[in-house]
Amino acid sequence: MDLQEAIERIQIELTGGTWLAFPPPERPRPTRLFHYTSQAGLLGILTSKVLWATNVLYLNDSSELLYGLSQARQILRRSRGGYFSTVIGEFLSRGENFLDMSTLVPDRQFYVFCFCEKPDLLSQWRSYADRGGGCAIGFDTSALTRAVLKQKLSLYPVDYGPGMNSKLLTDDITALTRALDVCTQKWPGNEEVLISAACEHLKLALIFRVFWLKHPGFAEEQEWRILAEFASRDLSAVRFRQGNTTLVPYVELNLSPPDQGEKLPICEIIHGPSMHPTLAAQALDWLLKSNGFADVTLSGSVIPLRA
Image (cartoon, rainbow, N blue to C red; front, side, top):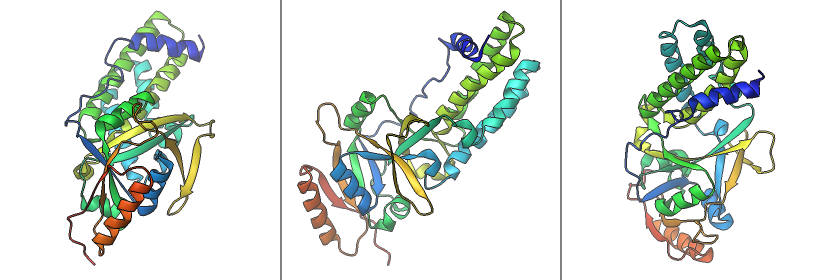
Protein backbone atom coordinates (compact mmCIF):
# COMPACT_ATOMS: atom_id res chain seq x y z
CA MET A 1 0.00 0.00 0.00
CA ASP A 2 1.44 3.39 -0.98
CA LEU A 3 0.74 6.72 0.72
CA GLN A 4 -1.94 7.88 -1.72
CA GLU A 5 -3.92 4.67 -1.32
CA ALA A 6 -3.57 4.90 2.46
CA ILE A 7 -4.86 8.49 2.42
CA GLU A 8 -7.88 7.34 0.43
CA ARG A 9 -8.50 4.42 2.80
CA ILE A 10 -8.52 6.77 5.78
CA GLN A 11 -10.81 9.19 3.92
CA ILE A 12 -13.36 6.45 3.26
CA GLU A 13 -13.58 5.73 6.98
CA LEU A 14 -14.00 9.46 7.74
CA THR A 15 -16.85 9.98 5.25
CA GLY A 16 -20.26 10.54 6.76
CA GLY A 17 -19.09 11.44 10.27
CA THR A 18 -18.39 14.72 12.06
CA TRP A 19 -15.07 15.15 10.26
CA LEU A 20 -14.29 18.84 9.54
CA ALA A 21 -17.83 19.94 10.32
CA PHE A 22 -18.39 23.69 10.19
CA PRO A 23 -19.14 25.07 13.65
CA PRO A 24 -22.60 26.59 14.09
CA PRO A 25 -22.26 30.37 14.41
CA GLU A 26 -22.22 31.38 18.07
CA ARG A 27 -23.39 34.88 17.19
CA PRO A 28 -25.81 36.05 14.48
CA ARG A 29 -24.49 37.13 11.11
CA PRO A 30 -24.44 40.95 11.13
CA THR A 31 -25.97 42.95 8.29
CA ARG A 32 -22.65 44.76 7.80
CA LEU A 33 -19.00 43.88 8.30
CA PHE A 34 -16.27 46.53 8.57
CA HIS A 35 -12.70 46.47 7.32
CA TYR A 36 -10.39 49.01 8.99
CA THR A 37 -7.65 50.28 6.73
CA SER A 38 -5.30 53.17 6.02
CA GLN A 39 -5.91 55.89 3.44
CA ALA A 40 -3.62 53.98 1.07
CA GLY A 41 -5.64 50.82 1.64
CA LEU A 42 -8.90 52.60 0.90
CA LEU A 43 -7.48 54.09 -2.31
CA GLY A 44 -6.31 50.65 -3.41
CA ILE A 45 -9.66 48.98 -2.76
CA LEU A 46 -11.79 51.65 -4.45
CA THR A 47 -9.60 52.03 -7.53
CA SER A 48 -8.75 48.35 -8.11
CA LYS A 49 -12.18 47.06 -6.95
CA VAL A 50 -10.53 44.01 -5.40
CA LEU A 51 -9.64 43.07 -1.81
CA TRP A 52 -6.09 42.30 -0.77
CA ALA A 53 -5.90 39.11 1.31
CA THR A 54 -2.68 38.82 3.34
CA ASN A 55 -0.60 35.66 3.71
CA VAL A 56 -1.37 34.31 7.19
CA LEU A 57 2.33 34.10 8.07
CA TYR A 58 2.60 37.88 7.60
CA LEU A 59 -0.34 39.07 9.69
CA ASN A 60 0.28 42.12 11.89
CA ASP A 61 0.16 39.99 15.03
CA SER A 62 1.90 36.64 14.59
CA SER A 63 0.67 35.57 18.05
CA GLU A 64 -2.79 35.10 16.51
CA LEU A 65 -1.69 31.80 14.96
CA LEU A 66 0.42 30.77 17.95
CA TYR A 67 -2.64 30.76 20.20
CA GLY A 68 -4.50 28.35 17.94
CA LEU A 69 -1.46 26.09 17.73
CA SER A 70 -1.11 26.08 21.53
CA GLN A 71 -4.76 25.03 21.86
CA ALA A 72 -4.17 22.23 19.35
CA ARG A 73 -1.16 21.03 21.35
CA GLN A 74 -3.24 20.75 24.52
CA ILE A 75 -5.95 18.81 22.67
CA LEU A 76 -3.43 16.37 21.18
CA ARG A 77 -1.84 15.75 24.57
CA ARG A 78 -5.21 15.14 26.22
CA SER A 79 -6.11 12.75 23.41
CA ARG A 80 -2.89 10.75 23.91
CA GLY A 81 -3.91 10.10 27.50
CA GLY A 82 -7.03 8.24 26.40
CA TYR A 83 -5.39 5.65 24.11
CA PHE A 84 -3.17 2.66 24.81
CA SER A 85 -2.75 1.49 21.20
CA THR A 86 0.85 1.80 20.00
CA VAL A 87 -0.32 2.87 16.54
CA ILE A 88 -2.66 5.58 17.86
CA GLY A 89 -0.05 6.78 20.34
CA GLU A 90 2.54 7.12 17.56
CA PHE A 91 0.06 8.99 15.38
CA LEU A 92 -0.82 11.51 18.10
CA SER A 93 2.83 11.92 19.05
CA ARG A 94 3.74 12.78 15.46
CA GLY A 95 0.85 15.23 15.38
CA GLU A 96 2.62 17.49 17.86
CA ASN A 97 5.49 17.85 15.38
CA PHE A 98 3.15 19.71 13.00
CA LEU A 99 2.44 22.54 15.41
CA ASP A 100 4.49 25.19 13.70
CA MET A 101 3.40 26.88 10.50
CA SER A 102 6.45 25.97 8.39
CA THR A 103 5.78 22.26 9.00
CA LEU A 104 2.02 22.54 8.83
CA VAL A 105 1.68 24.32 5.48
CA PRO A 106 4.77 23.48 3.35
CA ASP A 107 2.72 22.86 0.20
CA ARG A 108 -0.03 25.44 0.71
CA GLN A 109 -0.36 29.18 1.04
CA PHE A 110 -3.26 30.63 3.00
CA TYR A 111 -4.47 34.20 2.73
CA VAL A 112 -6.98 36.04 4.90
CA PHE A 113 -9.02 39.20 4.66
CA CYS A 114 -10.38 40.41 7.98
CA PHE A 115 -13.52 42.22 9.09
CA CYS A 116 -14.87 43.54 12.37
CA GLU A 117 -18.52 43.63 13.43
CA LYS A 118 -18.09 47.01 15.12
CA PRO A 119 -18.00 50.17 12.97
CA ASP A 120 -16.22 52.52 15.39
CA LEU A 121 -13.77 50.66 17.64
CA LEU A 122 -10.79 52.49 19.13
CA SER A 123 -8.46 49.48 19.14
CA GLN A 124 -9.10 48.95 15.42
CA TRP A 125 -8.43 52.61 14.58
CA ARG A 126 -5.13 52.40 16.44
CA SER A 127 -3.98 49.08 15.04
CA TYR A 128 -5.15 49.03 11.43
CA ALA A 129 -6.21 52.53 10.33
CA ASP A 130 -3.18 54.80 10.81
CA ARG A 131 -4.13 55.44 14.44
CA GLY A 132 -7.41 56.98 13.31
CA GLY A 133 -6.23 58.59 10.08
CA GLY A 134 -7.78 55.85 7.94
CA CYS A 135 -11.33 54.57 7.64
CA ALA A 136 -13.66 51.66 8.24
CA ILE A 137 -15.20 50.24 5.05
CA GLY A 138 -18.64 48.76 5.61
CA PHE A 139 -19.63 45.80 3.43
CA ASP A 140 -23.12 44.42 2.92
CA THR A 141 -22.77 40.97 4.49
CA SER A 142 -25.42 39.29 2.38
CA ALA A 143 -23.90 40.45 -0.92
CA LEU A 144 -20.41 39.65 0.33
CA THR A 145 -21.50 36.13 1.25
CA ARG A 146 -22.87 35.53 -2.26
CA ALA A 147 -19.55 36.63 -3.76
CA VAL A 148 -17.56 34.43 -1.35
CA LEU A 149 -19.66 31.38 -2.20
CA LYS A 150 -19.20 32.04 -5.92
CA GLN A 151 -15.42 31.98 -5.41
CA LYS A 152 -15.66 28.83 -3.22
CA LEU A 153 -14.06 30.63 -0.27
CA SER A 154 -14.91 30.63 3.43
CA LEU A 155 -16.36 33.54 5.44
CA TYR A 156 -16.75 32.74 9.11
CA PRO A 157 -16.50 34.37 12.57
CA VAL A 158 -13.37 33.93 14.63
CA ASP A 159 -13.72 31.86 17.81
CA TYR A 160 -12.13 33.37 20.94
CA GLY A 161 -10.64 31.09 23.54
CA PRO A 162 -11.20 27.33 23.96
CA GLY A 163 -14.70 27.34 22.51
CA MET A 164 -16.50 25.61 19.65
CA ASN A 165 -13.52 25.27 17.30
CA SER A 166 -11.47 23.62 20.04
CA LYS A 167 -14.31 21.16 20.67
CA LEU A 168 -14.58 20.42 16.95
CA LEU A 169 -10.84 19.84 16.66
CA THR A 170 -11.19 17.30 19.48
CA ASP A 171 -13.98 15.64 17.47
CA ASP A 172 -11.79 15.66 14.34
CA ILE A 173 -8.93 13.96 16.17
CA THR A 174 -11.31 11.38 17.65
CA ALA A 175 -12.69 10.62 14.18
CA LEU A 176 -9.17 10.25 12.79
CA THR A 177 -8.02 7.88 15.51
CA ARG A 178 -11.08 5.69 14.92
CA ALA A 179 -10.48 5.68 11.16
CA LEU A 180 -6.82 4.78 11.68
CA ASP A 181 -7.72 2.00 14.10
CA VAL A 182 -10.22 0.50 11.63
CA CYS A 183 -7.76 0.67 8.73
CA THR A 184 -4.88 -0.94 10.64
CA GLN A 185 -7.18 -3.83 11.56
CA LYS A 186 -8.37 -4.24 7.95
CA TRP A 187 -4.86 -4.04 6.44
CA PRO A 188 -2.35 -5.37 8.96
CA GLY A 189 1.29 -4.84 8.06
CA ASN A 190 0.59 -1.34 6.68
CA GLU A 191 0.68 0.49 9.99
CA GLU A 192 3.51 2.87 9.08
CA VAL A 193 2.00 4.13 5.83
CA LEU A 194 -1.45 4.39 7.43
CA ILE A 195 -0.03 6.51 10.27
CA SER A 196 1.56 8.79 7.66
CA ALA A 197 -1.76 9.03 5.82
CA ALA A 198 -3.63 9.89 9.02
CA CYS A 199 -1.03 12.60 9.67
CA GLU A 200 -1.82 14.21 6.31
CA HIS A 201 -5.49 14.35 7.28
CA LEU A 202 -4.51 15.75 10.67
CA LYS A 203 -2.61 18.61 9.01
CA LEU A 204 -5.79 19.57 7.19
CA ALA A 205 -7.83 19.51 10.39
CA LEU A 206 -5.28 21.66 12.22
CA ILE A 207 -5.22 24.23 9.42
CA PHE A 208 -9.00 24.26 9.24
CA ARG A 209 -9.41 24.93 12.98
CA VAL A 210 -6.36 27.02 13.92
CA PHE A 211 -7.13 29.85 11.49
CA TRP A 212 -10.45 30.52 13.24
CA LEU A 213 -9.02 30.63 16.79
CA LYS A 214 -7.74 33.72 18.62
CA HIS A 215 -6.84 34.60 22.17
CA PRO A 216 -9.87 35.70 24.25
CA GLY A 217 -8.13 39.03 24.85
CA PHE A 218 -9.10 39.99 21.27
CA ALA A 219 -12.78 39.18 21.74
CA GLU A 220 -13.98 42.79 21.50
CA GLU A 221 -13.01 42.78 17.81
CA GLN A 222 -15.77 40.28 16.94
CA GLU A 223 -13.72 39.41 13.87
CA TRP A 224 -14.80 37.60 10.71
CA ARG A 225 -12.38 36.25 8.10
CA ILE A 226 -12.32 35.24 4.48
CA LEU A 227 -9.86 32.38 3.95
CA ALA A 228 -8.31 31.60 0.54
CA GLU A 229 -5.91 28.75 -0.30
CA PHE A 230 -3.29 28.51 -3.05
CA ALA A 231 -0.66 25.91 -3.90
CA SER A 232 2.79 27.04 -2.74
CA ARG A 233 4.28 26.22 -6.14
CA ASP A 234 1.85 28.53 -7.94
CA LEU A 235 3.07 32.09 -7.44
CA SER A 236 1.26 33.56 -10.43
CA ALA A 237 -1.46 35.13 -8.25
CA VAL A 238 0.85 36.40 -5.50
CA ARG A 239 1.56 40.13 -5.23
CA PHE A 240 3.74 42.03 -2.75
CA ARG A 241 3.33 45.22 -0.75
CA GLN A 242 5.57 47.12 1.62
CA GLY A 243 5.43 46.01 5.25
CA ASN A 244 6.93 47.31 8.50
CA THR A 245 9.88 44.91 8.49
CA THR A 246 9.51 42.74 5.37
CA LEU A 247 7.67 42.64 2.08
CA VAL A 248 4.17 41.21 2.61
CA PRO A 249 2.71 38.66 0.13
CA TYR A 250 -0.95 39.09 -0.74
CA VAL A 251 -3.49 37.97 -3.34
CA GLU A 252 -6.29 39.92 -4.97
CA LEU A 253 -9.84 38.70 -4.36
CA ASN A 254 -12.53 39.82 -6.77
CA LEU A 255 -15.57 39.70 -4.50
CA SER A 256 -18.08 41.64 -6.55
CA PRO A 257 -21.45 39.87 -6.11
CA PRO A 258 -22.70 38.00 -9.21
CA ASP A 259 -25.56 40.48 -9.63
CA GLN A 260 -23.48 43.68 -9.25
CA GLY A 261 -20.96 43.47 -12.08
CA GLU A 262 -17.51 44.69 -11.02
CA LYS A 263 -18.72 46.66 -8.00
CA LEU A 264 -17.67 45.59 -4.51
CA PRO A 265 -20.58 45.43 -2.03
CA ILE A 266 -19.46 48.55 -0.13
CA CYS A 267 -22.39 50.30 1.55
CA GLU A 268 -20.73 52.58 4.13
CA ILE A 269 -17.49 54.44 4.83
CA ILE A 270 -16.60 55.79 8.27
CA HIS A 271 -13.56 58.05 8.52
CA GLY A 272 -11.50 57.86 11.68
CA PRO A 273 -11.16 60.50 14.42
CA SER A 274 -9.84 63.60 12.66
CA MET A 275 -8.78 67.16 13.46
CA HIS A 276 -10.49 68.17 10.20
CA PRO A 277 -13.66 66.04 9.94
CA THR A 278 -15.35 68.29 7.38
CA LEU A 279 -12.37 68.16 5.02
CA ALA A 280 -12.02 64.39 5.56
CA ALA A 281 -15.67 63.84 4.67
CA GLN A 282 -15.49 66.09 1.59
CA ALA A 283 -12.43 64.29 0.16
CA LEU A 284 -14.01 60.90 0.77
CA ASP A 285 -17.25 62.00 -0.89
CA TRP A 286 -15.35 63.07 -4.02
CA LEU A 287 -13.29 59.86 -3.99
CA LEU A 288 -16.37 57.64 -3.74
CA LYS A 289 -18.26 59.43 -6.50
CA SER A 290 -15.26 59.43 -8.83
CA ASN A 291 -14.99 55.63 -8.47
CA GLY A 292 -18.66 54.80 -8.97
CA PHE A 293 -19.70 54.53 -5.30
CA ALA A 294 -22.06 57.51 -5.12
CA ASP A 295 -24.68 55.54 -3.15
CA VAL A 296 -22.33 54.72 -0.24
CA THR A 297 -23.25 56.21 3.17
CA LEU A 298 -20.52 58.44 4.59
CA SER A 299 -20.00 59.34 8.26
CA GLY A 300 -17.29 60.02 10.82
CA SER A 301 -16.11 58.37 14.03
CA VAL A 302 -17.74 59.64 17.21
CA ILE A 303 -14.67 58.82 19.28
CA PRO A 304 -13.02 62.07 20.54
CA LEU A 305 -9.64 62.74 18.92
CA ARG A 306 -6.78 62.64 21.42
CA ALA A 307 -3.82 64.74 20.28
